[in-house]
Image 1 (spheres, rainbow, N blue to C red):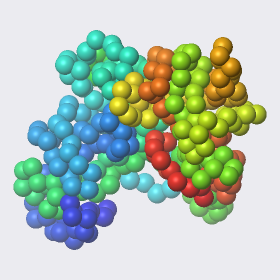
Image 2: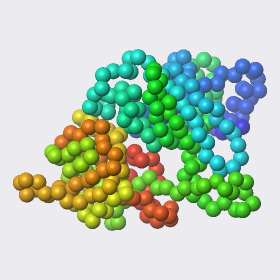
Image 3: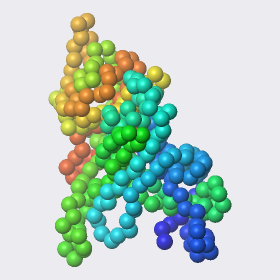
Image 4: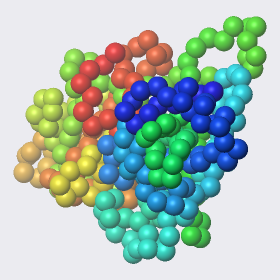
Length: 311
């Protein structure tokens, strides 16, 4: 029996077991969160016929959903799971150049959802529409590997978090041939107390970004390809057109404009869907993750807007 948490945050595993033992047709529904909770483009979906409010996470809206089977097994082998969502015809709006107004189909075509965290909660509902009295159990956690837009549906191919486990497996443990990976989500430059944040300036394109540093040191220029192998993530904000978009950085340095002004420049591997809006779009950057998890780095989702320290 998995741990079940009520809407008020208390443990309700015993109550959940009692309810399941008392009925042959329990009300069980999925709550699916695709994306970080703080991202405005995140998807809050449920296969229940009406909106459900589960207090620890918020409001989940009814949607046409299907997913693969979540398996319960012993070992460290990561699980792949496909989630299919049909946003409906109203979501097939004309293409825009703003991630805040783009349809899910357009965002899927742009691989906007790739690498987003995925959380599936199993809701145990004693009465219709009540997601809080008994609450929910965490059913699955992972990340989006690829998104495949199809006619009237989007398929999210996900993999569980086990694929980033970093630990030595004793020879007597089953599945010792499983390949383990090590990863960190954010790595700060040496000496910086917070993640560097930049604002785009005129002259940027889809794969060449010119920007000025806003913090932690105004107008600082990081030279020597410090961020090569790292990545940039665009932030939400008033007028932002690329919120949530990201790309790996191939090189960075200094740019001098025609008026003698000095700015930071970034060349990126994957072109953005459209050029950033000057003086409006902002982003943070991370150095390349360390080879060993014991090195300097910050552990968390790639969309944390204001990490404050490294570990």
